[in-house]
Image (cartoon, rainbow, N blue to C red; front, top):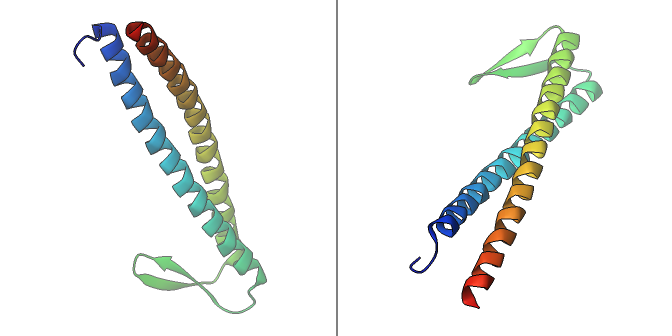
Length: 115
C-alpha cells in the first residue's frame, strides 16, 4: 500500500474488519434461523403425533410423559431464537451500513488519489 495515506490504510483495515464481522454475523443469523425452523417442525410434528414421544438427552432418547411441558419448552426455544435472530438482523443492518459508508469513502479517496 505504498503511496496511500495512513488514514486511507486505516480505513481499508476497518473495511476488511467490518466485512469479516458482517460475514460472521450473517452466518450466525442463517444458522439460528435454520435451528428455529427445525424446532418449529419438531413442534408441528409433536402436535400431529398421538403416540409415544421421545426427546434427545445427549446420546439418549428419553420417553416424555408430559407433552404439554415439552410443547412449552419448544415454544420457548422458538421465541428465544426469534429474539436472538432479531438482534443479529439489527447488528447485520448496522454493519452493512458501516460497510457501505467505508466502501464509498475508500472508493472516493482512491479516485481522488488517481487524479
